[in-house]
Length: 199
Image 1 (cartoon, one colour):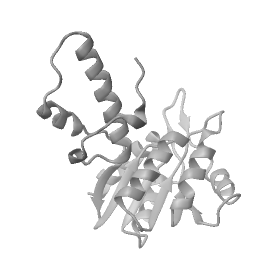
Image 2 (tube, helix red, strand yellow; image 1 turned 30 degrees about the vertical axis):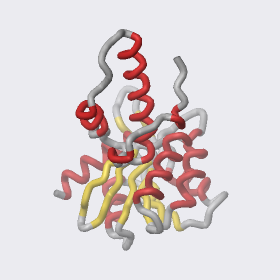
Image 3 (tube, one colour; image 1 turned 135 degrees about the vertical axis):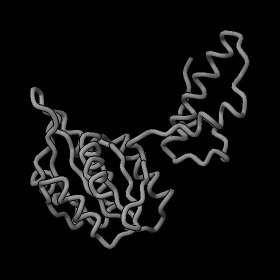
Image 4 (cartoon, one colour; image 1 turned 90 degrees about the vertical axis):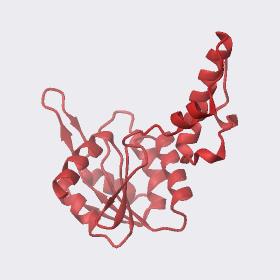
């Protein structure tokens, strides 16, 4: 059974961000197919409303910090970054956004495509680094390499803050009222720890 993700109809009353509409629609179609195939009753409107309220940490996760909206999203490839940018445009039209980002090392260099989607939408970018774990650590691409790459296709203002805590402080001091942390779920974990320290 094949489902076209773009053709899935989601009730407007659910007010889901763009990326969640697609995910919800696909999940709904899969469940509806299995229920019908197995001779079960379809989902009730209450079950659908409950399912639409599922919270996904690190996906367009919005929190208030110092009177600003801080969006945490672990987008790390072109598909996820495209969904993120579309959701930002939908939720915050005509709004200047500053971003804090770090991208994980990867042999396929997929982070480059993701940045080509993100960077044109940002007013300012703070690049940082992370290293998680000991035996097989997960590391970010060196911030200087990220900045050098961004400068090959954009003149957006980019600055480097190698330590995530200081990078977060720089981001929070920006004048923009909507701020974004993205590029890696590893970065989000680190930033969430620092946010707890600020509270």
